[in-house]
Amino acid sequence: MIQTLAQLLKQAINNRLLDVHTALIAKVESYDAEKQQVSISPVLRRKIKSFDSEWVKEQLPVLSEVPVLFPRAGGFFISFPIQPGDLQ
Image (cartoon, helix red, strand yellow):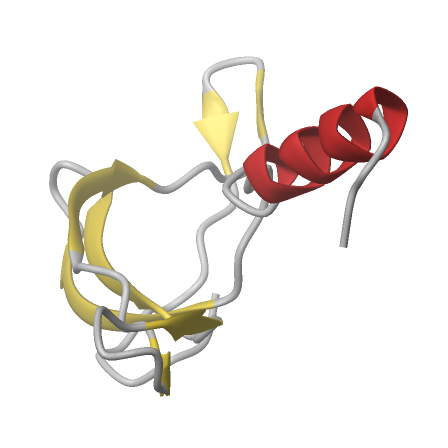
């Protein structure tokens, strides 16, 4: 199948956009309340084609030292209890 240049460019852009993640749901692995940082495992599992042309679910790596943002104003902040296993 011969593709036009426009189709080829559109496919290339769409392929790159699959790797753009502005927000993801993730499971908390650990929480440091003093530093207000978590280690999280993204829940997203995208299907990708392996080297042997089979479709497999991709496991994204654990992200460490991710800052947790709580509402703040006037030197005070509201915090919520975070436990391993929570979804953020």
